[in-house]
Length: 367
Image (cartoon, rainbow, N blue to C red; front, side, top):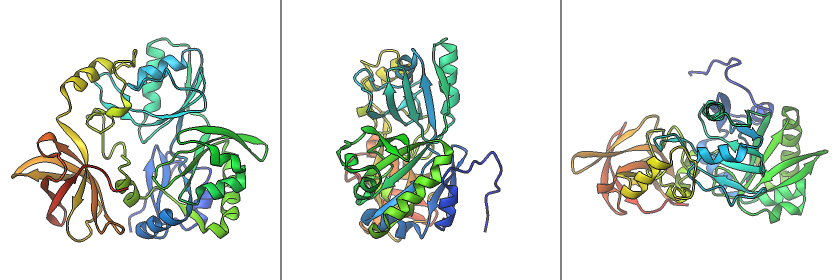
């Protein structure tokens, strides 16, 4: 069995001791940190997530902190989403683009005050881009990575578990909103968000020393809820259409190609560095776009590279994520498809490691 060689370049998290005690069976590397990928099996973890509640170590969702008078201005320069109406207490999912309109990240922004923001990032070295913007434009803002490690509570029983720790006030938190709630003498940002469609929260744990006490408290409080350690689940995220930056999309893709046009207020996002490029894209429209794809046949092997997609004998796209869905009894997939073949119901072919498979484009994802 091939193993990852550990070093200080590959960082453990404040919850790693708990993850190991829970019997983690696999990791990936995400923002130079360990991210668990499987505990029992991908399929068993999937069923448990959909029926119970899990505690996820997602400390790899690193924060970029912006503090200072120009923090809001810098935030708007990064994204084509109009942030002017965003209030403290809100979280925004937002594309971050470069000067060509290419995707650099798709984080969640957390507004703490007018001059204090967190950017909860996907897997990329975005910190250096943000620092470069701040210094290049001589902004009055401090940009850094603070000691903040998210812990996600996901699944249909998440509200019940969280209420036992933070009180019934958590039940009133609306989607993509947060409250500052106390735990053992500290106030933590608790947001209704997470990388699944099963419902839940993300707790922004400030201070590495606070990680394991919170982890243990959650697991002990939820024994009768069948709580267990978990992680983002490949099958569930594909069913839900949750994109993975660096996998389903890269800086070669615009938000419109990624189906994220609804998060672009390009005309109103004055100051965004990619605004002019995205205005042209919005006017002309994308020539390819991400779609849900149903692949026939037996369960497909792991998708560790892009699989070519063909239509009428010509290459018309690629599959970036795929897995067998136990609930829908088919292979669910995410693919980038040219406009000639992206309509729902279009029949295509996918070249998998096991050979050519018939497939169908869907209008929406499954969950």
